Image 1 (cartoon, rainbow, N blue to C red):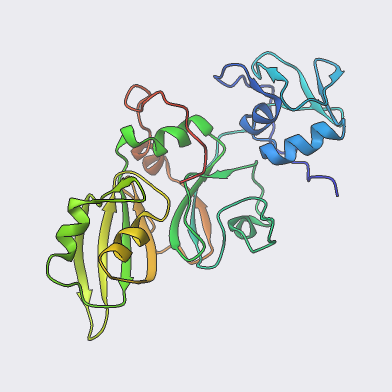
Image 2 (cartoon, helix red, strand yellow):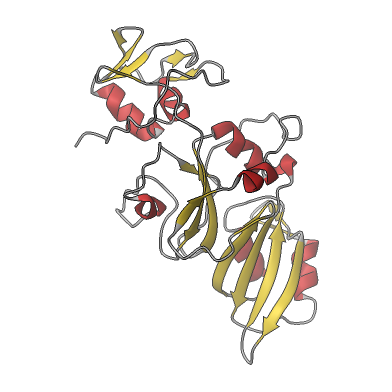
Length: 269
């Protein structure tokens, strides 16, 4: 089955501010498709660069200068799109899942959009605010630990927090050779047998909150991200998506000089 083509958007070619990259990466940066889809298109001989069919996915080009065509159609940069999704529990944060599980892209079906990718991850059992965009540089700056973009989570645990538990989360600990710490942890409300905590992180690591709480003897019943960098989920219905407002986008516009210059990975946190 051929990967779906996404020839959306209008206007003349716009030159992205980028350097020499692999051809699959170039197609992704231009908002045409994912790198995995691009590799399949290249292997099928459907991609031409400056009039020549390219079958080697390691070919490096400057997307600002090279003429790229897929099935004869010229590929130009899509408009930049910045979205928020209220991710339901049970969806995986990926484009193509080998196990054919439901993904966050199921929430985008029927919406006219360029190719977008998640800004960070929420695991399958987690829910709440997930940003998505086709602006890879913006996403990398939001994800960069040096940017200090805070993320706020409401977490239901299976017990009442014991004395010192919140202090332990904020003091941090080394787990599997990795130092994990919560910037802040506080009690939201408590019932007879469980409680809701508010936990704030300033950097994202794989299953960080679940690992921290497991280390202090608590199991997570629900984990909901409600805020990223001051942009709040609000009353957006579960499974719904909307564009960020200009004010929300501005709240996440991390200056280039603030973020570190280490290479990032778009959509892995």
